[in-house]
Image 1 (cartoon, rainbow over the protein chains, first blue to last red):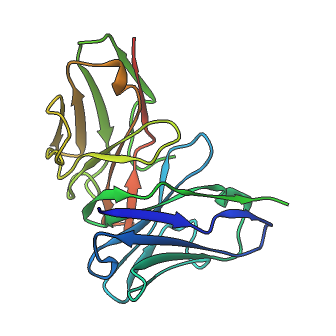
Image 2: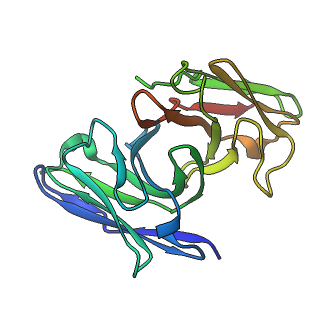
Length: 117
Length: 110
């Protein structure tokens, strides 16, 4: 079964760091475009970042320089390293297969990040 | 402020048809494929339409999409109460080098 399962969310203080994981099954992360999308409480979807090929990554301006997308091919897992977290980063974070010029056809269930003191 | 513009809400009676619009520009909708996503409260988004007008396996043909110039449209016919959800359009913006979404449209089936 094709599936994505996120983990790593939680409560963190402003300025802190968190690493989200997205474990894939039923397909190979390394040969697919992979995307992070977030949704703040009561708000719409916001694109965060996409990775494809080894060094091709893009970031939303709101997270550029603070977030890093990466993948571990041996673990078939996608990551989002989040540093210098702000209150406005509070959201549910979804990982998805696809992105860039491809549709996002498989989504994880999401993991919640709360940035608060 | 979303790059793509959608109406905040639409409504119609069961059995009727509703149209959700999505307006963009030449750097996004005008030159890239549009996808539509359906999201029920508390759940992950689900791909509904891709490449402007294609349906993934399992999506009923009551859902259809189209694109003209810098705008896209999602049509839902034979409305059912189970269609009540938020609908988002999305694409890539070649100038921003970002993925972009509309602000979302809440569908109410009266």
